[in-house]
Length: 84
Image (cartoon, rainbow, N blue to C red; front, side):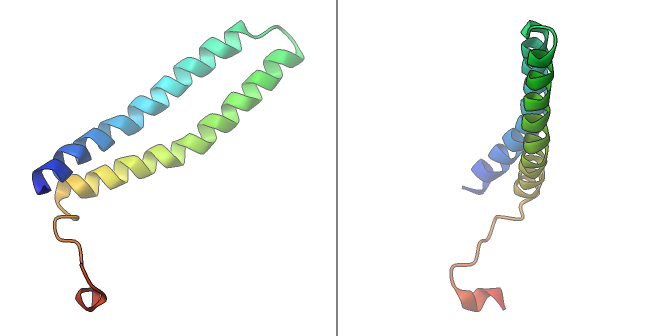
């Protein structure tokens, strides 16, 4: 199970930047297809908000993956006595 956690940690580390790159590619495509004027402004604003929301989420994925890869989740406590 610990090997699976470490392998998935690498997956999460790679998934964060890939998602952000994909979002930027989609944003540039959708903004380029939008009509000039207010439609393009609205589309740009929508994609800016989407990207700003997903950057911290993807950063969290990378951090979570790093800790999983380093083995921080190898032993998880099963009771509250183990937390002390």
